[in-house]
Image (cartoon, rainbow, N blue to C red; front, side, top):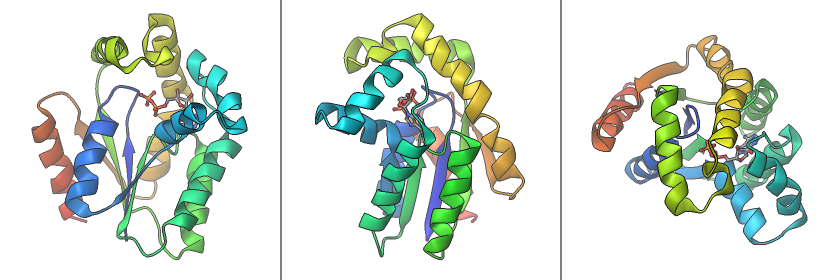
Length: 190
Ligand code: ADP
């Protein structure tokens, strides 16, 4: 199986690149952000619990997102592989993911980390907020909080995957198609 962690701060372009990768390599896209927004749209109890946390730009609890991913892995047997987008975001989530994949006799193939500076991230997210309608894209303080959460809790995962020799860092500024080519090159070398 080809199991890719697509990594990077909010606004790095993970969703855009994930859509290109799933087509090219015939993978399943698992975005915890999209899954959570789906729960909110359907007004499920889980969605109701997550909404205020997400609107503030804080991280939802590990148990909630790990449970969602476990269900998705169980519901998609016999696939080519997965792109994990926005997950894992904490060391606890990364450890849980390793264990879930081990149960299925597979593992993470690579972490592809998109590098984008904070000024560019803020610019992109404010721009996206004009169309996305996402509460967490509308306000600069909330965007800063998301970037801080990333730096505090999520960025350390680069060490986690680097220790497993799985980390590749890719420049995330440039044309979408050029960044895609760089990601493809790393995957094709696996
Ligand atoms: P972005 O990466 O652009 O911030 P996402 O759609 O990935 O957007 O995430 C939006 C919000 O959903 C996060 O700010 C957080 O509140 C919640 N979320 C998504 N994935 C996770 C996760 N793995 N762990 C905790 N919270 C998450």
